[in-house]
Length: 351
Image (tube, rainbow, N blue to C red):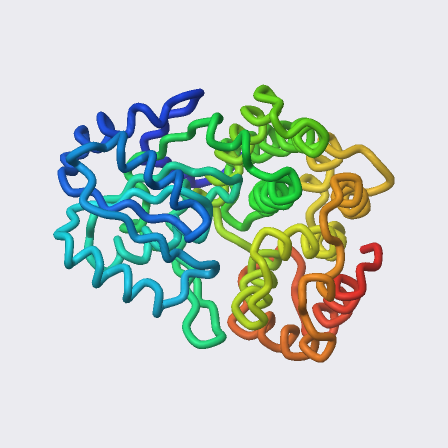
């Protein structure tokens, strides 16, 4: 007999091609009259286009979003929001920008919208990760849920293929952990499996033909499902490791997920047979962990933490931080085991 609790989502999702043309209507539906647009410095042109689409409802742009949501950046954005009298925020971009929108929302109560251009999935979760100093902390807060997400496949057509594939592997990590989460439920399991199927099908095509609209649509669909999974169930060892590495060493978010995931799957496989079996359906091969490792290699994704800038001397520090206030995991975690698989991930060895 199944026993579970399912947490439904309250975020409105608009998915398709050319859907960014609807942002003004969606803002109006939320009662937003003074929208502050958020972006990274590299996406100011896209932010300018959205500002034009919003018309008089847009009151400004803050283009300083940064990876891992540094508190000092949030403080600058808050000051800017106050100076223009913003009554809402709209984040265009990936996890950096959407994270900034959440950080503003939790401090002000302002409603937020998102227009994702990557496969990060943050837009579908109540998770806020912030960095202060060199430590990243993560909280699950209902008040940071995005009110409306507009997925426009067209905005991903120019997403560089090398970054697209690591962003897609990041999304796959969300789905994999949903398969063995402590609070997994039948709906999350089905969505996670569908997400993995869509991403493993589309990412190789994108790596070769980045302007393939069907593959882009498939990948964005998979990313939406994977993000939804992350928003409805808890995280485990993989996300803890990536949060530690990103916050402590400033490693790039998606690339870190791409490198770490096969090693955590190898560690958890003995304790998560159902998850491993479903993953193997999407990635047939010798075993799920090596299937992921080989898949990343075929995509041209990084497979070694040292290539991302992590010092070898940091392995011991990271292992200590991972087991401190650790997340639930299907297999008990100890420092020696974490040190061992981090050493393999650092060197780019097979899991």
